[in-house]
Every structure is written in C-alpha cells, then in structure tokens.
Amino acid sequence: MPMVQLTAPVGALTSEGRVSIQRELAAVVLRWEGAPDNEFFRSQAWSYLHELPQHAQTTAEDDGPRFRVDVTVPQGALSDRRKAGLVKDATAAVLDAAGLVKADALRVWVLIHEQAEGTWGAGGEIIRYAELVSLVEGTTPGA
Image (cartoon, rainbow, N blue to C red; front, side, top):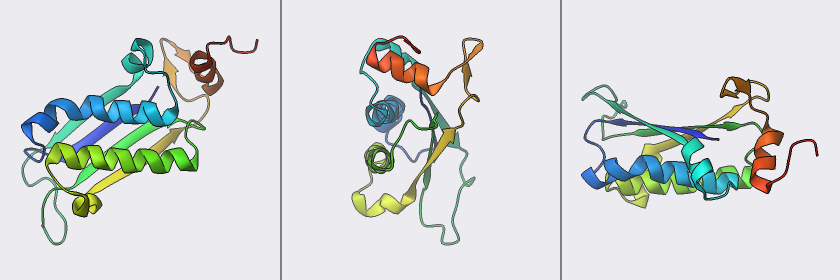
C-alpha cells in the first residue's frame, strides 16, 4: 500500500510524461514491494503529482529542473536491495517523463519514508504489515 508523490517544476515534464508518470511510479513501487499486479493492489497505490509554480524551485547554480520522488511504504516492506531497485527505476521513469537522459540522474532525488508499524491507518483501522503480507500471499493473518 505505497504512496508516491512527485514534486516537479511546472512544465518540466513532457506532455506524454505528465499523463503517464503517476501510474508508472506507482507500478515501480508495487513491483519492488513484491505486490501482485492486480486491481486491488493497483487501487491502493496512491500517486500524487505536485507541480511547483515557475521559479519556486532552484539550486545555487539555477541550471534546470529538479525532481523529488517521495515514497511512503510500511516499515519492513523494502529490503536494501529492493530500495536500490526502486530508486533506480523511479529515477529512470522521471527522466523519461521529463525527456531527460541518464546523465541528468542527479536531478532526481528519491526519498523513501518507512511508516512505522501501527502508524498507518486505512478504512478506519490500523493496517499492520503482516496483514499486507498475508494479502500478498493469499493467507489469513495469524492463521
């Protein structure tokens, strides 16, 4: 049950990239979490695009757009290997959506936020990581 937020300067994404990037990033996170590619898990992978107004983002050099991908997942959902894969694939997706090349990879920062056990609620209840694993495996928690 990931949440992905891409922050980008307005106009930094291509028109095609602007249409596709949210679903692409959600799919990247689900893949690296090991979630099944089905309607339920896709519907639980929320994705937001925050476009900053012109001149709201810069660096000391002012040399072009920068992108921040914030990924929130339950604590324990991603091993170090999975985090590395997620960062690599999310960076590639953003570069593609912006019409940039691999040499521009430092323009993309991916920040992974692990939500501590017992602090994620949905549907009026606390969601536990073991419950999510059980859904993936098709078992009942505690059985």
